[in-house]
Image (cartoon, rainbow, N blue to C red; front, top):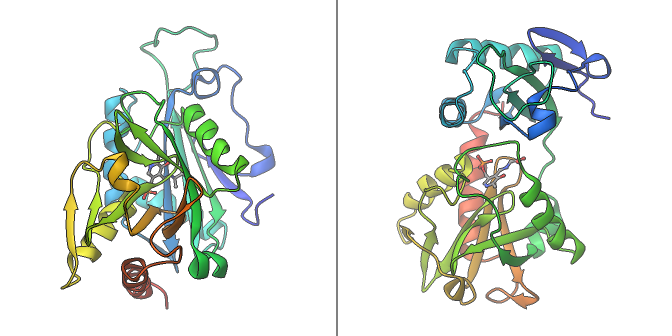
Length: 287
Ligand code: PDD
């Protein structure tokens, strides 16, 4: 049970235990919906415009009506933080296609989206991760071909991640047709011959908001070459550093891949520089 108890559901503010949706909601029956996770530092929603733009794109791609304007979303999120007296947290937002009172694959024309938002804790990076990094496994990317959409349909991600967890790993890195796409719940960067490489945006991966911010920060480093290009699985295995990014984990160093040390098996200099740059970027929003 979370410390943040007030949730938003279809225009109402409710204690989490009282929030209910129909068993015929298409999110429940088909995984027919879209979500966002927005990190909040102090009271500042990091890269809010970018999250709202990705939300609008995801909804558009699956033809779910965006129920609110940018300004209405902003007000809703501020209200959610106020109602929960929350800071340094993560907002979870989910919009499903809604319920038509039955189960039918065909999409009815007169259906109202279900809108749900709540606040989750955003734990600080554990010291063990800063000191030792995390381990990862690699697996074939068995997901669908529209991974740029932030869909709630995450069964493949969940099962892939679980394969990593079963081996004591923090993440599962995904490979499709010999190329690295992303992690089960993160984007991937690798240091190859002193160049920081991350796969380009496209249907194979989620356009991560943290990925874009880390790219921006990396490009500000005078001695760091950065490329958005295809990253092959064999290159990944020669990487001297591997980093994963997400709104909830920021920027983790991966120091072991499939049981083998990455570089010298410790968080590397590029991770350390970018992590410091990320903290400095955040600090401007935390009083
Ligand atoms: N997931 N790729 C996948 C498959 C993800 O699930 C996520 C984040 C990312 C990173 O995106 P961003 O930097 O915008 O958080 C990449 C969120 C945090 C989640 O599902 O909880």
